[in-house]
Image (cartoon, rainbow, N blue to C red; front, side):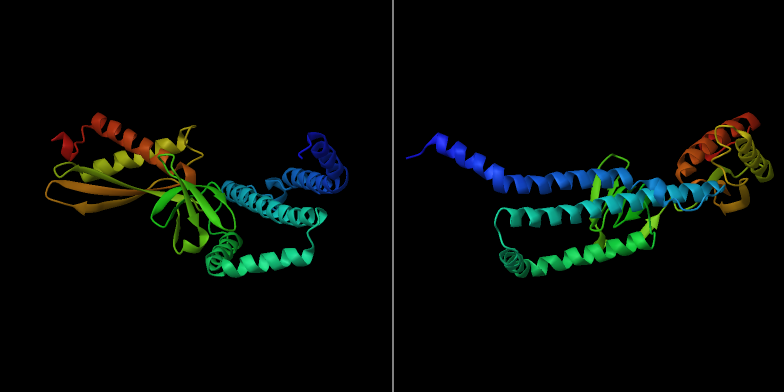
Length: 276
């Protein structure tokens, strides 16, 4: 016959003996995990001090990536060890645990091949510094900012806010849009009848003014470079210029340049095809 008092007594006895030992291991795991999160910080991986702004930013992204991977991998190994210690504490022998793991391992062996492939690929992505947390990349026809990297997956968030989880083993080609520096390719069309030299001077002046603008001068790494006429059609002439920028500033610089060029063209009376 079921006895609630007996159940309470048995539970109390288990907690005083077996449960106490298992609880100690779990508590130890929580403490070590907290220490790991507290100690493994990005600043410990920024080994070289540099005055170069690009190098400082790259070091910062690299440090964030390495520290995140070490914390994640360390926690995985830690709790795997704690799991086996707790199983042993509650009476499961190591031999039976290993036997159980072996049976499960055989059952999922084929599936684990992709897992191993992902983890090996993840190791080389991190070791060879293909990209870091914070980079904007294109992987498997998906573009977005890298939010997380671990040995198994890379997580991107695109411009719409959607999250893409990509197994590292599927990553064969990566386009990193924010590696060290970026370059805006600025194609500006003008009407065929307009003075090309005047238009080029206006575009160059806009770039030079941006170099002295306090809001944008730190984003530009060198003065804009005028390449000249890029294309001529029946209705327009396309003038191409290049602007070298900090990686994450390329899009804002391009938007501002296009806006200011349009305003400068209007002021100088230079017409585009749309104005005709």
